[in-house]
Length: 178
Image (cartoon, rainbow, N blue to C red; front, side, top):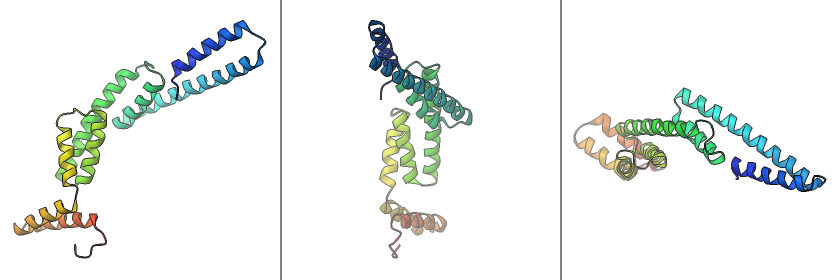
């Protein structure tokens, strides 16, 4: 997919060709088609920028960052995209980190790993996210939940044991032994 600057450069070069041969219908037709693509690209940028702004107002930083990255690919330096993208990525990283920590406390390792993975896609160096991701991935298994459930049962922590064994059962829903 070409960015807006490439399309605008092509339009400029096409205008030079039209100046050399103003009667050429193929050049005129191509110029109209290219003008339409440029207009569509500009409209799409406006829409995405407005949607990103709405996402930022709602605090949906990850969605805003995704849209702003898309804008940046199409038109680097579009309005305040660069600074807004930096802010959105910073806030998204903070939010995802907090979500991951909350999921850890709930021992929801599958979603914690997914959350940390999304965070690493935004900022792989954010605090200790790589370590937390590896930890969550290693605990995202039936064996982890069974082992922890057995420990809780030995300690007579029945609520925890039941919760962990129920999570283990989610990994093997057809296993009647669990």
